[in-house]
Length: 595
Image (tube, rainbow, N blue to C red; front, side):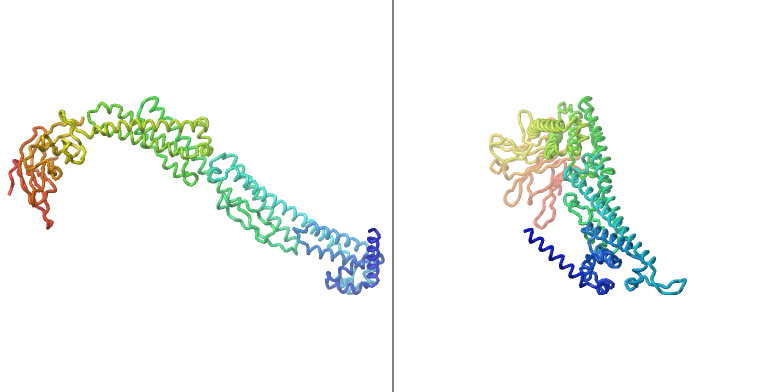
């Protein structure tokens, strides 16, 4: 193995020695002077490898320029170390050139230094001066050193630019991990979030600053293939944008615009969220004060509650949180305040003799408790523990802890359920009572039901103040007209004897129309049924206080559809003929038919 290596080295040295004997510098210079460095490089290296040429000034000069040329071909970002090493080599050869360069070299090989030929302003002769060549080489050494410095600076700027951008992205990603939703980002831990936003902005702005410095330095180096620009990409979707990497070697470097994003988020937090949270606290304190008035002082706040609404608060929260937990709790509490106030406002409702009023009161209470149940259910539909974190200050300051808030909601759910059940039972009881009118020992239904011979009363008219219908007693039909009192007691019930034409077997065909004056004191009722091609009827006039005034049997050619009472005291029975014309039968105040 060792023999093989030694043999290879021997052959390689023999090759260079042979090549050195063959290379003539004049021929080589022909390539170098035309900057055909790729072709000249191997021969120049071979030439300088020969110890006889170790002090050849121009060969070292050309090698220095060759290293500069090769260095310029290296990528300044991806091959930085190689480029700098080549520049170091160029410096070394420039310095060696200076050490070998003298007047003898310039005079003897003036054809190598034709580029420095100029007219002497003093003598007027054209020639080459050693000082000019030395000066140029010294300037080249300065330029190489400067280029090296620029490259090192460029690399520093590039790395700093990249480091700051990566830090901005790192903090952004950390924020997104901690607050995966825009809602949680805006609503939770304002101080911590704002600090992170400042850090993101600062890092991104630093990255942009160093990019500008990097661009300026690129221009100073010259001869590089980079002409880059930053393209700021907006962060439109918090859950999707902002984390993909940027390629800083691309011509158009696409970077996430963290400066604009942090400015937008900071503005929302400072200008909207923080004031809204202060308003939430104020709203909560106001409701707590009202609740104390109602529950401790037993003072109704119904007049105050109707002036309070969560609509404005929720509207401003909609862009952040469409179902804000505090607003849901406030809506429940406002309804509970209305309920408590209604209990206080109507605490004496049972003392009223008006069943309809009692029913109205209890119906209002039942509706309010139903709303309470719906509202508390909507709160329970939320993940209270998770949502409370978004409004932590409110939860802790109002309820001491999130767990206490959860217990509060559970307790109100039980309260709403029990109150609804209680008010529903009361309502059903009163509703049942309101469906019957008590008249002496009779109970008259105030609802329409299917006619049956087993029922004594068959209502045909059920109005707010009166009811009228048929009464079946011992296979005989009679009419009734009753005035409804407040306690569902009949103020007066008029029994109307119907002619024998009204039979029990035609019960279902008998219909009733009624009318009263504006005061309700004068009333008329018409019982009628078909008979052949016409209709028979019986009209009665009654007074609310004095009872029945008169009854009259009539015959109508067309079915009546309305009774009208005029100020003159006449009653008009309206029918409509087949051709659409109105037929009117008029009875005067004594029941006589008016022609």
